[in-house]
Length: 379
Image (cartoon, rainbow, N blue to C red; front, side):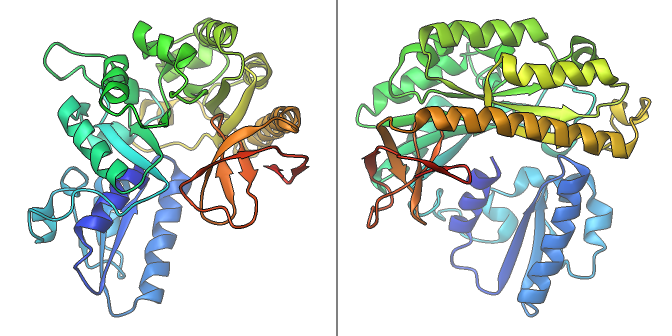
């Protein structure tokens, strides 16, 4: 999501000189800390530039960010893609220069109220691009040579609920595939499994151009913690979804976000969190140690000691690393169509990172048969 937005701002502001924009994040306390570090680093590297901060941290922690000596101005999160906010022409380029993969933010904001999450305060209510708007953005990227489109959003699977007749995300994917038959690869970013509509499920299970890679906004493996998080799915919902998909498309790679040390989490809850990695065969895990966000209900719940949170996060990362290593080892010797990136690596359809033959041109899809594994990279 932030890549999509940052690239649009980069294109929109291409004619501006001596301007630095920090597109900030506030999803965790660590993200907010990294935002402050990025602001200070940008000022050191560009002492004479005008430095403007936008994004979620600039919205949620507006007074503190605005008071930083390095900051010259703030732009509201909701207005950051509006040329008028930057005093640039309205006809400024709407998309970024060509990239290997095109990140298309089809949805923004969130209508849910997860007890740990501050993001609705930073991004507002859920809102969707229309199908013609999405197709227009994709068309421009394809004209620039993009081989893969990645649909992104704050709550991607809620796309369409605010549009006439409330279409579901599956309908958007069908429209994209029909409009661009030459598009070889379409990928989804993080999705809420409980919101996957029947048409989208069928596409994930059987459409070759939809990549076999599903990243779930899972958050935890224990039902009581999911309830206290105010998530809308149970452990059984996630297990059933993945089982049905793998029965139809065994090669699908599962990713997930998991939070360690949520308030009231005990040893049994942590054990369930560890076990869900193996039960769902999670090979792309994003592990977050819980950090209280002021203004959220979870910040007022009984907290787990910080050293315990860190230790449990380390446990989850170790378990996830074991699972990922075993998965990657199973791909050795298999021929994979890899979309070449810059830097000598690229991604297979299942999002495994693969080393490329020397001289591979970025943006091309190359068949690679890895013969080994080195530091998490198929070689």
